Length: 265
Image (cartoon, rainbow, N blue to C red):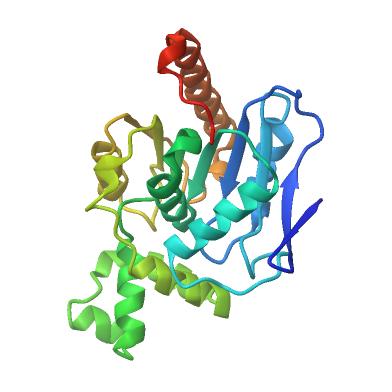
């Protein structure tokens, strides 16, 4: 898999050489503590339709660099990544905290986006906020539940986060804990698909639904029998939803009068 270099650092990404030359670009951003591996089913199965690009964020996977402290900082890095690869206007897909990064990117660079796919994410992150509070107050899980900081219903999801904890994941969760797009997400005027798995124990349904309701052109869709990582839990259903969304968007773009179309900048 290839690397790209900027800021004197090598960054790794996954892609496929099977894509048609004129295929729409679909860039996929992983979430907290993860890597581009979570998009393996999309790189392998959707590349005959789209040019799939899935980077390892800084200090994740095979990428160098340092972990960032906010979704906005990752969005700035993502813009450099996109600029260095000279990508045209694209579809941007983000999972969990990757969805926060995608929201921040759309806030700053909406002219470069054809559509958003927001997966298992929200305007804020309930568990990450709890994680942030517990960390800053030096509490353990049982004490946090006893004090009412962490609802009993969050125990399973929080235990999962702790079980896979690492320095990078820890930094990502703290960054997710302070993310909140609710004050500005209504200003994002690009087509969006919000996906939520019915077995998700990390992101509550209400938070994904709130995100969909806040974006003027968004559609909310549930994926049955899928957990937090929908694209690996239910890859067929996930890929079909993505394909249907992009097909609708591309059809809409073709129907626009020429003077309404915005060139990529």
